[in-house]
Amino acid sequence: TPAAPLTDSGSISGITLRMSGPNGAASNAVLEPPMDTYLAERSAMIQHRLELLASAANTPAGQDQKTQAITDLGALHAGEAADTLASQITYLDARKTKDLAPESVHPAFAALIKLGKPGADAALKALRSMDLAPPTDTSDVTASPEYRARLLALVIRDVQGDEVADFLLKREASRTPDPRRRALYETLLGQNP
Image 1 (cartoon, helix red, strand yellow):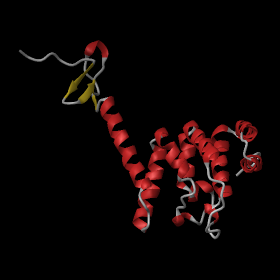
Image 2 (tube, rainbow, N blue to C red; image 1 turned 120 degrees about the vertical axis):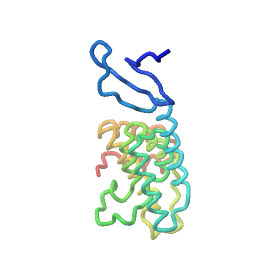
Image 3 (cartoon, helix red, strand yellow; image 1 turned 90 degrees about the vertical axis):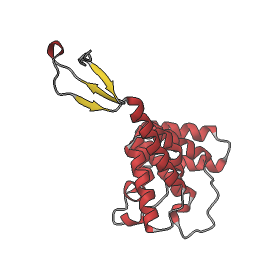
Image 4 (tube, rainbow, N blue to C red; image 1 turned 180 degrees about the horizontal axis):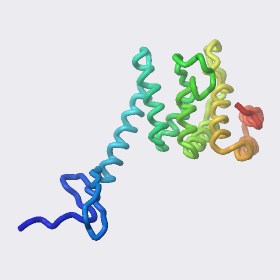
């Protein structure tokens, strides 16, 4: 017996076939994978890029891979990677030093902004928990807590807007018992790029 024709949608070997047309007539069929396949592939891509972020980038090729992984996480809107990106916010893409805008030289900064609210939430969380001790190597300005805090605050400001960012920073300043952290939050208030 012949198989019944597919008129609305059907699945053939894991591929969804969508067909529509007047009175069940076939027109412009589109083959696409099922949603669970897409989600599994996206999850695998995100996991692979997170592994690249965790590895040392001691060679130019390793630095390129790390920068691309960070950029990809932003493009994938991988909210689940936001905390990792916030921890990598001062990672410097040394190839882009001609344009010193934070989004050019710090790929994790740009990726957090692309994430939107999950990026701003991760930045605020990182601000709350960051180590305020001065670095042992003072020659690298990007290693200072003030530099890291400024980048994190700028993510919050870029995503949430100035008024909400100032409200969040004031709230954090009023909640912390640590006078150094309170002074840091107060320094970040009203700070624009």
